[in-house]
Length: 470
Image (cartoon, rainbow, N blue to C red; front, side, top):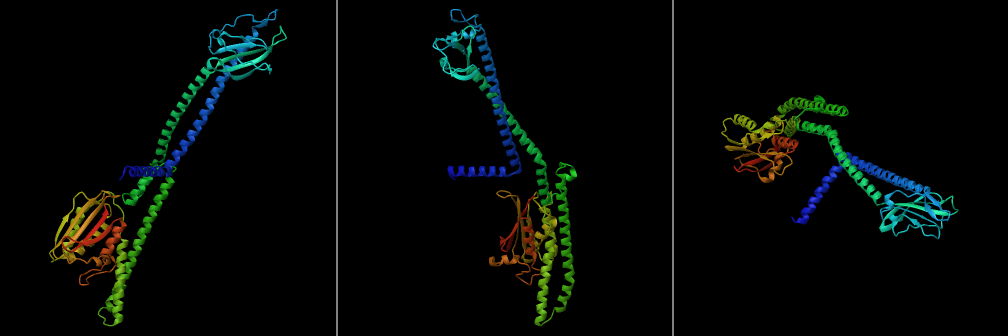
């Protein structure tokens, strides 16, 4: 695989994981909570930043207003008509050039009086538009400074002349304070968002833990490791979920009752039909006319169907929890087959690791493997072998491969699939009902496995069974 294709595959896999997460309940809760928390924190941060800026500007404006009132208070016009201050303005900042604090008093067509801090720079004074109300604005200052300017026009009582008073301060320090506050504010909000996100992850994880426990309990019930959800018995569920647990347990109990009732009805019906069928079979046995042979054949078909569905009704199809030791069960089945074989000398060889277990019911395993081993013993000339291996790699769940071989005549490849049909027998001389392989396939399908036929290494038929391992 090329690097481009590999990157595309990884990107698609990552996109799939993200899609699954956003579609999950935990993902929806977490994403919605984080989004709303982020929006709330951003809005709160903007509001706090605006409030702080307004407070700082208000404080600056108040200081400018006080300085402006101080300038007006110490101003006077001498008898000669000269503008002057009756006392010095005791603030060193107005004496240092380009200090960031400035004042200027001017009147039309005359040079303005300026603070020494302005040096050779003059503030812009608009004498065309008079305003006796205090107003604030942003103006350009010396050395490229941006100034906050407070100004208004005053008529001094000593002279009927309008003087334009201006006081200004550099906004650099103010803006630096605002920027510093914003940085601290949004850093703190980012930390709060990270903390809130972590808290939300923990909250969602903790809050949904009972649902994950219910899922695990349901998996145990489905696999046969447990009969009911454990939350109700061990008081591990929150009160909010107890009704759900009780309803699920009630549904499980009801299904068990319905299953048992259905099995009982099937068994009762099958046994009730067997007696009349036997009577009919005995009545027509030996008959040479066509009608007797027809009735005998149909009666046999009915008996085959009854036996098939009776055996199907007994299939449990669930896990047992700890698992069923396979080697032990195979030894017992082989001993039983040897007894049934009687005088027929069959050499049986079992190759099964002792630690392999079947994830299912003992009755189902005995029915399935017993049918196969019994069939192999019937057809074998002298040898039957059983080999069991555990398969894990590349499978969704571990599986058992049980291979049963005999040295009998075997079955042609084009006739093997027909053996799985109910009542099919390739040789009527060999005793049996023709239900064995049909039942075997039904049980394997119930457990999510399969059954295949092939040519055995011994020369006869090989039956390969796949079943879930524990």
